[in-house]
Image (cartoon, rainbow over all chains, first blue to last red; front, side, top):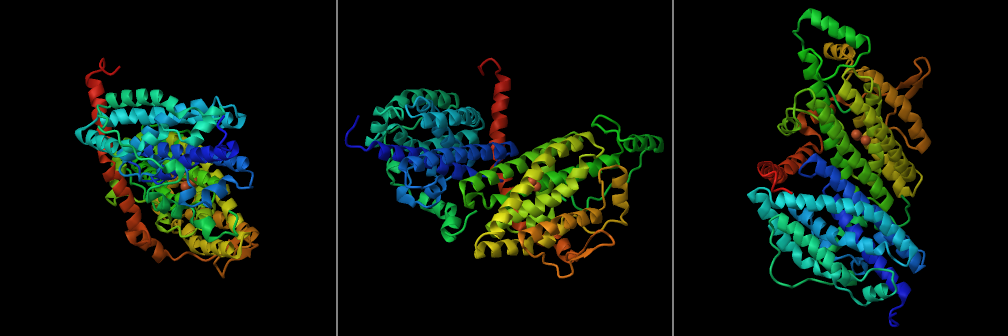
Length: 256
Length: 325
Ligand SMILES: [Fe+2]
Ligand SMILES: [Fe+2]
Ligand SMILES: [Fe+2]
């Protein structure tokens, strides 16, 4: 076990990474409400957002418990600023067209599912329990996003071009998910969270299969953005938080 | 109610068939899509169910306006689930309309072309979080007044859709009331937001039932066919009688100086909404008509490539069934 990292602190950090990613992605997906290309998608997007917000409540709730300073999931969601958010950069990317939203979801789901499978094996029973519950929801998210990526990638000329464009734009944001830092390593060594490098194989195989069936081409170049899970974000996140946190910040005495 | 001022179609069918049809309705039988029905019955129902479906869909917009700003994770989840339900209601209703021979796309195009309406209520803005409470409490509350009796409507698919929808609507109404209760018993600012929301939504909610139709020929026909179960005035009265005590419980003031309990009729006397405003809203001059339709038009236009892409893929699969797996 790594001696330099305080395990509780690492665990708080790791749980915020999970909960912030589901919160930020849930928020993005919920922006579609009432605006989706077909009614079935409106329903499916709302359902995905709902699952992700529910997972956020669990992850951030546990983060607050582990931290032991009395912060609730709501306090963490609504009263931290950008630099304290630990979500992946991928999930804060703006929605763009439906193709971007869908590709972002697929690339995330393809990581999220094996990640939750690993978390379900956690030595920490609380983590394992949340992952078990979330895993069922996310298996469905992945099934749906992979299926739609295939259908739109291998659809019309326009849908193909739009999906390829989305892939080209989003691909450089996928590296961060599988590159561990000291926190990830400490958590893996303690058996609390899976080894991120171990997810690479599953993610690669799944993504390559689906994109091939979708007739989409993985971009050349190995450059990957990073920093989200250490609190270094794009400009987009601040605007999102300004909207998300408006009420609790404007009326700090109120309960809702 | 979500279907306002639906004019019924005159019918020129064989009088004997008509009499037999009416006898089935009078006997409480359900009419199913494959059964014979007068053309007027079919057309009136398409208009009514279509308008109701459009209202569910457009109704997502004023509430969706606050999903990204919901003040707690739980409130966000509840609101997401509600708006998702409304989309589901739209889906059931479009399916019910399809059994009458009109496609969802045709209905959508009629909405976007301004040939079909949706409820006037969704042309009012949601300005504060209390409005989300007011919408659930008053708007879903008014919808329930209309939809509960419609569970007994004569057209089978419509009746069954209403049964499913009503369960969820009463849940929505309770959640809206719960937001209002929190606001009305909260800080001074929250209490003021709650009162302000009631002030703005009271009369538009009364308008949801439509103007008095007690002398309307169209309504009488629809009532004989059991696709309209009560007069607009009856439903409005019921709504006021139910809602006023709830407002009192919340410590809020209904914005009507002439509101009075009338012991003789066993209900409240209350002021009529401004019907000039109502007709302006129907004509497109409400505060949000332009935005609401523009949002639906944009979703339709921006989604065209998705719908086409999915069809192109399905066509490829159909052409090469063996290659697909
Ligand atoms: Fe509804
Ligand atoms: Fe509704
Ligand atoms: Fe509702």
